[in-house]
Image: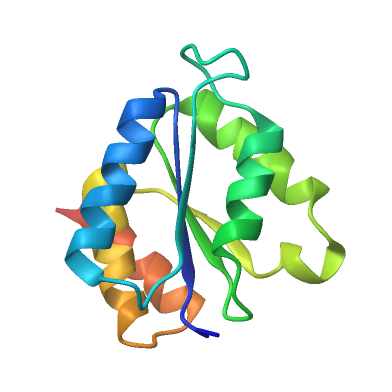
Length: 130
């Protein structure tokens, strides 16, 4: 079982979420747990708290999970998903303020080297300082 920080991608579009996750997986391989949640429960544009929780569980590691989101609703629903996770997990889940694709690649690259959650989040958010 990997102890690298997991990455979750949350997008309003199922195709964007899946495509971004595929790109990250191709760049960092299987050393980092990666999951995604995209679209509403009907398969349309939107996000779903339950699907986000399932993605967090799928990418979970004891090192924590970094979430990348595309728009405000994805962030709000991700925050709700975190609040609904087990208490012992909540402090090890962060939402990164970063562009979804570039941030996910940077976060996953940092995670693949074994960095802790704070460093993974900082790597993703470095892009916002440019």
